[in-house]
Structure formats: structure tokens, C-alpha cells
Length: 473
Ligand SMILES: [Zn+2]
Image 1 (tube, rainbow, N blue to C red):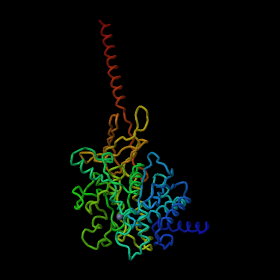
Image 2: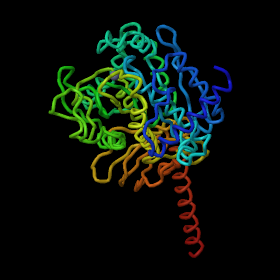
Image 3: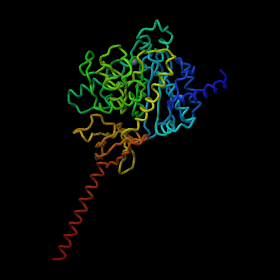
Image 4: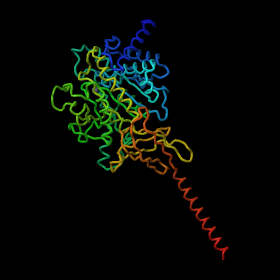
């Protein structure tokens, strides 16, 4: 394809996605989006988007699959390729199971629509990109995808291409931090977050898991979603039940209310997920997800250990949910325009949630320098105790805490500083920024010095009085 016709295709794409943006048009059979993109087509598509929007995108590779396919991320930001303090980081991961490629296509299409929005000066998209750092990994398991793609649909089994090229299910390959969490709880040890410090096993992890795991730890991600297919529901932590594999029982995380609200945000803004307008994917009438608003607790559905969702929550500050976007794992490419239309609003609204709650910077009172690894606890004012999930500040002293509207008390602590508390009312009315709550902490040494100074002044005052007394006599 020549340069000119490429340009034409891009322009065509612009017009179409704009139509979808305002929800006015029926899905159009744009031939560019009615088939699955293979690895090379996907990389080319991402490169085209980057070239069309060079000032707000960066492409980067987080690692390679077993068969050496690059795991490519497209980053949307006004400062592409870098983290800027107070600008929250968000990510979407698709195609972790190779035979579940709808998310892969939706993320490519989302990337295209964000770029087109910038080119066409779409107000919402420009506001989003001005305020948000968005990372899209369309395919976490490109090897599994290629296997599923080259297998004839009629020969494709439910699990063909699910695993990576070594036959490992990547969503069972992360460190099982749920196990650590439950163990600490049993022993009544008050440690609830950043549990990688306490984790060790002798398992050799897959290159895709290592690449994504390191990526998760490398940036201060606030919000995330992992896109799958095989059902239609938004799944939230915990994924694993304390009793072990065989039991399906609700396992609430400390942020259960916030996670439900995040999952509902996706389900409600999806064309069908949260509505009672479709039969359950498994064909049974019982336990339909639509009866519970299109959301489910992971462990209540079925228990999974070593999943990516809970790893995000228990190893970092990030909150991740798992989206199941289609009953059929790999539906025909012809259905992709409809799937895009069904999900586009939900994908956008979920991204906006990265600005819910509070954020701020924590400073040293004496030096004015930001404090890294300060710990921010939150207590819902209606609860007696803080939520057992503090977040920690990043290298620029910046912290982010996703919360639904409500009144809270924030406590900040850092080694060598006096702790501090503030009461806040979170309204979540500003779409593109969380409520800013900064903290300036007194170093403990400074506290002691100040106290010493006070004592000296008091002594001096007393001495002065004594002198006056003596003079009088
Ligand atoms: Zn899956």
C-alpha cells in the first residue's frame, strides 16, 4: 500500500470513529476493523497511530514472548514516555489469553480513536489526554493469539491458544499474593500492601509474566483493567478464596466497596453488561450476572490463584478489575465493529475514574523536598478503622488514592516524620482531577529541636523573671 492510500485509510478511520464517539451512527463495516490484526499488522497499526500523533504518543516494548514476539505498549500522554508528578497512570491489558482477542482489537481501536480525537480536536479526548497518562498493551500473549488465529474456527477448541507457547496460563502465573494476605490475616500481622517483600517461591515464571510484572512495578499505576472474553461481566478482587481452589465463596478485599463501584462503572456504561437484556453466557437462567448489575466478585465466581488482578492490588497501589467482554472467546471479525460500539463508552468512563478520590504530594517541612514511600491510610468517616490498604508515595512524593464520593480521614506517616491527619470530603465532581490534598510533614528531629527551643525559651523567661524578682528585692 502506498503512502497516499495509507493516508486515505487513516482519514477514513477518523471520520468513522468520530461517528461512534457521539453514539449517533450504526456500526459501519469499516474493512480495517472487521478482522483480527496479526502481530505485524498490529505493530504496523500502532506505528501508524504513533506517526499520526507523535506529540501525544510513545511506543515502547516491555519484553518478548516465548517465541520472541515483542510485547508493545502505546502510551498516550502530553508527556509521552515519562511519568509526571500528579498525573495519574492508567493501563489496559488485552489478550492475556491468546484465544481471547476481542480486547486486543478494542485496545487498538481505542488507540486509534484517542489519536483521531486529538487530531480532530475532540474536547473530551483532549481533556482526557491533557490530564491522564494512558498505557495500552493490546496483546500480552501474542504467541497464543497466533496459534488461535491460524487454527480453523471449527477446529478451535475452548482452550486452543489460551496459554503461552510453553503451555502456561499467564493468569495463574503471577505470585500468589492472596495466599500471603490470608496468611498474614490469620496470624494477625498488620501488613496489607506491597506484599512482594514477603513473597518467595521457586517457580520459574514465564517471560510474558515477568515482563508485565516488572512493568506493573515500574510505574505508579493507579487504575487498570485486564480484558478477557468467555463471558460478559466485570470481575473484581479478590479472585482467590481463602479456603483454597475448590470453594467458590465471596472474598471481599479491603476495598470491596470501591472495587464494586469501579466494576459497576464499566458494566453500566457498556451497552449490555449491566442490563437484563441478554441470556447468561452459560445458558443457565440461574445466577445471571445481569441480576447483579453485570459485576461479580472473582472468588464468588470461581477461585483463581496467581492472577494478575490481585497481584496489582497486593503488590502495588494500582486497582485492577478483569473484564469479560463476549460470551464467545473469538467471535468472527465481522462482530468487532459492534463490540467496539458496545464497549467504547465503558472504556472511556472507566478511564475517567483514574481521577476519582484524592491525590497529592507529601513534602518535608524543613527542606521542602518530596518524601518517597510515605504511607497514606484512609478511614471512611462512617467506619471505625482505616481501610486495610494504604497507598505509598512515588519518587516525586506524589500519591493517588481512588475513592468514591464520601467523607474520609487521611493519615500520612513516613519514617522519621511526625504523622499527620486531615479530614476531607470527596465529591468527584471534577472530571479530570482527583481532589488535591498535600501534606507537609515535620521531621522528628525538627520536632525535638523545636521542643528543645521551647524549653530553652521558657527557661530564659523564667530566668528573666527571677532576675526581675531579685532586682525588686
Ligand atoms: Zn481469559
